[in-house]
Length: 107
Image (cartoon, rainbow, N blue to C red; front, side, top):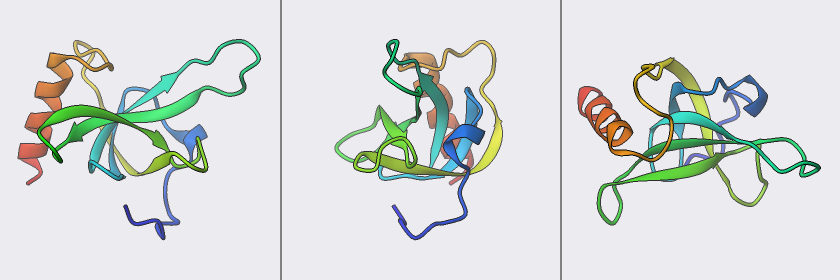
């Protein structure tokens, strides 16, 4: 991850189910997901689901840079499009296949 990237999309401006080009630790394209928090726990956490290629191909989730000063690893750079309605924004086979195809199209 290029931690000097200052021109990124702030957490509050990210759109759930948006597919973003990101500067992340483990992937460069991810789907924005917002994890609700329990009452009184503060604001919801925004993260991104993407395909991690290190140690085998698998779905992984990383937190938005603004979500946590120690564990936030993704800076979204550009909203590419919205996730198709027929694909759930969670760790599942349909999303895996979609992200894999998206990666192949952008190689």
